[in-house]
Length: 303
Ligand code: FAD
Image (cartoon, rainbow, N blue to C red; front, side):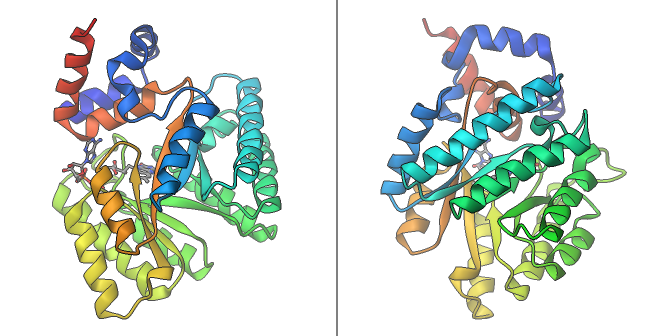
């Protein structure tokens, strides 16, 4: 109920306008590294200094006009150039709808291709985040198309809550496509997605097994220590090298765990979002944990 209500608010523009009036004071700065690239790069330097890699997300999604998509493409090109200049240990994540997928899939592919081409110039990697289910097939097909064109530094995300995911993972593994596995952050119907946490967790482990057994590089993106411990012991039992996978977590969540895994020698990647359109991302983080809402209310009360 709480999750459903919050996820409904994530796409509400009136609620977004209201939240932006409060600005980062609402508590968003706990989860978002800043509104500018400069602020994000400062956060990245600190993380890299602790041995943690990053993936940078210039926030933006659900755009209304294609000129917004052009603006976001330009922002990603500048971001990749800055990462190269600053020798950042990291890659980038973007949302396909931010590049126009919902408005014009053909030009969205062109924009994403331009970003992937720039990334390849600097030996960097581009991850297409997975959004809600109307875009699952289209997102996977964008990545497959780019691989067919010879671009290998691009991958996507598979959500364990979707019934279809084992089939997708198997096919993308045969094609040796780099994947991030997650539980899934959107509101989906029980006709296409597991509703119970235990079922999502079992499917998550099933997907992790398929990938670790295959040796195709995989990001395991979760803050769930049970899943992390299970992955570590599965990999150990099967003698799967640490170079075949990495753990990924979000900026501001379970920071001590990120640091301790990195100290132990695991590759840890922190997802660092920044930009003006922080609201939908922030609300999804609130939806994941009721305690976060209390945190926001406390911040609203502050002068
Ligand atoms: P949970 O069982 O939800 O959480 C485990 C524990 O982690 C909780 O008990 C709590 O202590 C802590 N925790 C989890 N979330 C929060 C929070 N918001 N605030 C504070 N503590 C928290 N989803 C997509 O649908 N598409 C994507 O492309 C995508 N990319 C992601 C990239 C990364 C690097 C990560 C880490 C997540 C991504 N997600 C994505 C979100 C993911 O689907 C889950 O919604 C999110 O990770 C919460 O699930 P969990 O695996 O951490 O497990």
